[in-house]
Length: 302
Image (cartoon, rainbow, N blue to C red; front, side, top):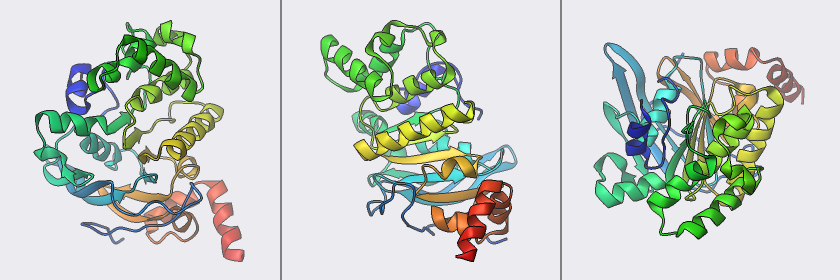
């Protein structure tokens, strides 16, 4: 999908093509619980997926997936490659249209909005992609990239936009003078920080993160995860965090949904998923990560 197509779908996204795109849980079944934030997520669904279905040719990619995310909450969606998790993420932000089902933001069905109302809602729902270099225009200085959504969605003048860009760069751990550089001048972790700055520029209510740390080394992964957790705590946005790695999402998730073959096979509080998984596939995922297996064993002994 091209940069212009992304801009039309999400309002502020531009750049080159992005990420490629037992019992089951379906319909409106949901669970709530505390998790990585150390507190109970705020009640109520800010973002809701209702019965999402997507088929490519004869291949069903997503089958009747439903969940909700509250303000200040992180819901991690975990599964192997081809499980439908990234397709689900792209439907949430409008990069793909579901064959059936609804995506609601603060009660508004995004598929029914048009014009100014749709543009306002797109500002509230932003995405961070797996490939930070691919999500930034390589010919555009990063300050201009970060300022682009401000130009589109706010009435800030040029001086105010420069001040906001400087503030955003500081928020993500970079320096204001970095605004004058091109994306290729930065490391992978720094580029992901820039992509995050761009995504939060207009204070979105929900952030969709599609494998945002999978291309980074372990130490940089931890830094980006800490950054996202701190920003969520400070601003209160809801977050859908897509990953193939249960060990990674343990650091950020309040609740976890597990996808397999396009279906959401388990959904529950993060602690329950790690220590008492109900579905056989979830148990296999937990068992495949030694640190999680050790944690589960100590919980059972306690």
